[in-house]
Image 1 (cartoon, rainbow, N blue to C red):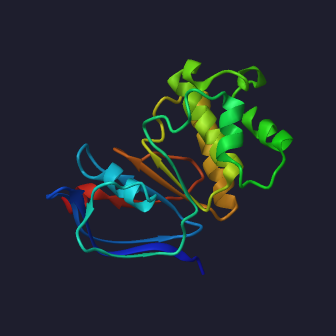
Image 2: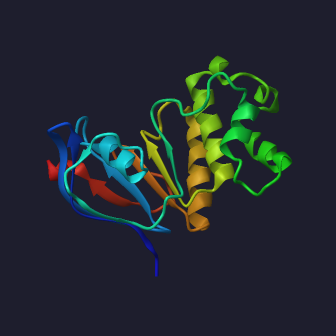
Length: 200
């Protein structure tokens, strides 16, 4: 039976006194994938930030049970350190990974050519930064991965890399939570859908 890692009762979130989400009863289980969908302003980013422990707003006395803190998030904004090289970012963000640096580099080469390892990330395009983030996520192998607007900055090849990553993580019983305006069809990968439009 799949383990529940996040459960909420009457989850109500906002900023200052403005409520963005109210009375959500949610349950997320390990080994399952989820897509949080909703129009602009529906609270998608607020919810995924709360799940990934990156929420800086107000929790209005919600009942929440968490069983995992090993959660990674890729947001619409770059999460890498711009002044470091790609390789330095890999080393910095994957210190707890048990695989060797050679294995880490091998994984990174699936996303970006090796010539970019010693290039500062500030010189990367938005698409290259997103690929670099995906490579680091693959190396870290976190139990839960949250991606806000997962297709942002990705060309067709980048989308294929994202699909392969989600598929690999799914086969390894790791959960993936995506937040997007419309449902994304990743052929062969099953998602449970949380439609925030229904909660407005």
